[in-house]
Length: 403
View 1 (cartoon, rainbow, N blue to C red):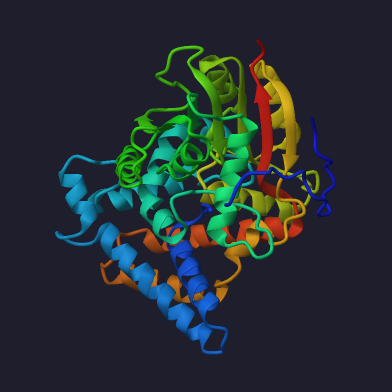
View 2: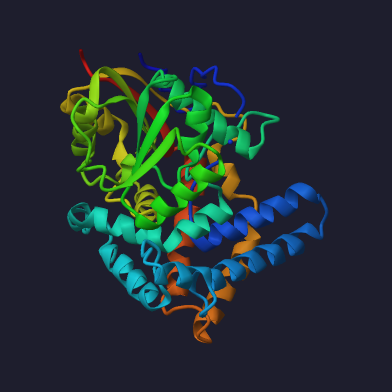
C-alpha cells in the first residue's frame, strides 16, 4: 500500500490511534527554544519576547552548569559511579573536537569516512546532548505533525501510537524498539498496546536514564533496555513479534544493513515500521541551497548522509522485506513539524552570546560555542527544509517479513 506522493501538502491516511505526546532536536539551542515557547504560550504580549529570551537563557545556563559544572554537578557524580555514557568535564572538549573532526569535510567529501565511523560518533553525539534533548524536548526524541487543538505532547503520543498500530502490537507480544533513546516511545507504546517492549541503544547513559524512567512509570515489567549496536544486535534470530524504529535508522551507515539485522531477529510474518529521515522529490541535488541545508542537517544530527525515498524502499527490498505501506506524514498537517522550532528564534541570539562568554571565562569547555554554532545551523536547516518541503523526518515505511 502506498499513500499518494504529492508534495504540495496532500494529506496522508491517518491512524485511528487513541489520544496522543513529544519530538527530538538540537542541544543548548533547543533548551532555549522550548523554554521560550512555553512562555509564549502563556503570555501573548509584547513583553513576551524579552521574557522568553531571559527564560531561555536561564534554562540554558542551568543545563550547561549541571552538565559540565563543578564537584557537586550531577553529571560528575554519575561519572564517579561508573556511568560514563555521558561525558565528564575533562572529556567534553575532546568529544566536541572528535565530533567536529568527523564533519570537517564539506560538499559530500566526508561521506565515506562518516559511514565508516558513524556508530562511534552517534555514541559521542548522544553523550553530549541527551540531557539537553530531554530537558528541552522531552523523553521522545522525535518530531510529530500536529492537528488543530492538539498539544505538543498529544501529537507525540499519537505519532507513537500510530507506529504501534502499524506493526499490530498487542498484549502478549514481544516488540523491539531499535534505537530507543531514553525510552519515551517505548513507554507510550507499552501502555497503548500492552505489549512487552525491549529497546536497544548504543549509548550507556541512555540505558541508565531509560531504566530509571521505566521504574518511575511503573512499566519496568513491560519495558526492558539493553546497550548495544542495532547493527549487531545480541538477540536470537526469529525472536520478536514486531519492531519499530522512530527517527533512528538515519544513523545507520548503510540502511540495508540495519534492515537486514532487523529482518533476522523478527519472526516470520512479523511487521517492522520506521519513521525515516529522507529527502523528498522536491530536493534538487543541483541546487546549492538544498545541498547546504541537507549537509547542515547531517552535521548537526550525527548522520552519515540523508537518503532519498527510493533509496529507503530499495534497502527494504534488499533486506528481504515486503513493503506493506509507505507515505509521508509531514504532508497535510494542520501544524507542520518544523513549527516547533520557529517559535523562539530571537532568543537563540542570546544563547549564542551566552555560550561564547561562558567559554571565554572558563565556565564552559573549549569548543562549546563552536558546537552551538553548528547546532544553530542545523536547527535553521531543519526549519528551512520543512519550509521548502525538501526533507521529511517522518516518512513512514511499514514492512513485513515473509512467512
